[in-house]
Amino acid sequence: MSETFETQNPAPLTRWEIVLDQFLGFLAATVLMLLMIVTFIDVTGRYLFLAPLPGAFEMTEIMMAMLIFAGLPLVSRANQHVTVNLIIGLLSPKIRHFQRLITQIIMALVFGVMAWRMWIKAAEMLVQGDETAYLLIPIAPVAFFMTILLGVSSLIVAIQFARIIRGKERQ
Image 1 (cartoon, rainbow, N blue to C red):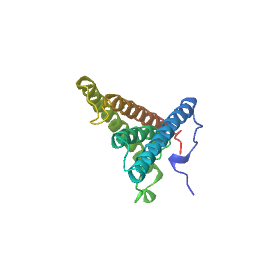
Image 2: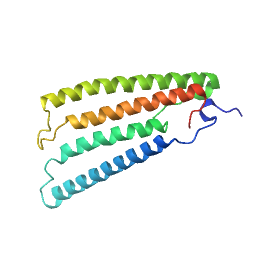
Image 3: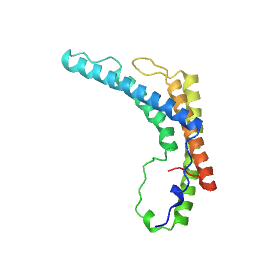
């Protein structure tokens, strides 16, 4: 049985990866807990007291965006993006290695371009003073948060690309 390039010599997590995982994991867990609390209060208020939580929809939207973008670097660091492996088993290890390189560089570029464009949009939101309709929560800080995490994801994927080149990719 031959080993693939993806599973050879996985290196231990570095200190920055551990800190990043812990910080973003805590952030995502906190946002998820707040999301559950808001949903519980909203549903309980709606069905027991006929009074839903004012602004619950806006808070849910903001927290969902934060949750998704806080999870993106975690998923990128752990190489856990959704994939479809219809023909991967038919390819040679060298072709799979090349496919992995191409995939990582495309992902790094896409995340980088998304971060760049999102930064421009966040800056526009800041200048225009965009707010949510009901609670008047400024939207720009959330957009900047998303931008930073897209940039972090792009950097992580670029580092993984370099590791694949050196043959030290993690599983």
